[in-house]
Image (cartoon, rainbow, N blue to C red; front, top):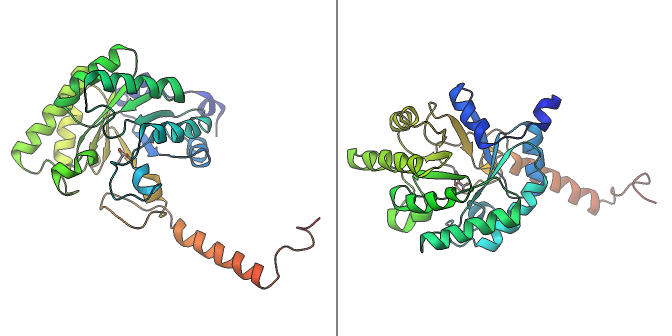
Length: 271
Ligand code: KIV
């Protein structure tokens, strides 16, 4: 890896420039120090401490149970492993829905306690005032529209959003509202590629797709999905680049066999 790549920190400005220069943004989620360090060394542009940690780290069915304290705990570990990538933190369910003031206070707490570069919150028009207040305080905000998992109980399922004309219009307006409120980027989750393309063209800020098709300014995936570590749920938009669950299981079988058969430790591995 070149020295420049190692030390140049990704900022909201770099991401904006990448959109202007048509350089795609590669983003992933991270929840711990070791993974963050590997992903950062590999050259990832943006790391999201996603509230998906409620699913893939804590084993919950939805993202709703994860708390502010838990998001802060994981983000502190992630930021220690990162030199270059921009670290964005999901604001957990009910940390910003109650009021603009509550959202503002919690965003400030995340920034004060974690060394992250930005926060992310879900929703469009209805969170625009909160985004405005947070960005006015100098805290970069990333938006998230389309399928917003914190609203699962309202949606009733994790199906694709924006298929009907009315829903597509709503999502488009949500994206515009977020940009107007001062967000530096927006995640477009599980919406038709044609709608994601329309939003990407209409916005000056970068769009980061997850199930949003090829024309988004960047792409994000949940890292344990891409690595084949989390096999419980496999949306169509996931491309599996490895099968680590199988690889780990194979390694552990070998270890157990070695211990049981007295093949580990060897003389060289002993003192
Ligand atoms: O929590 C998360 O991992 C996310 C991504 C799916 C964008 O919000």
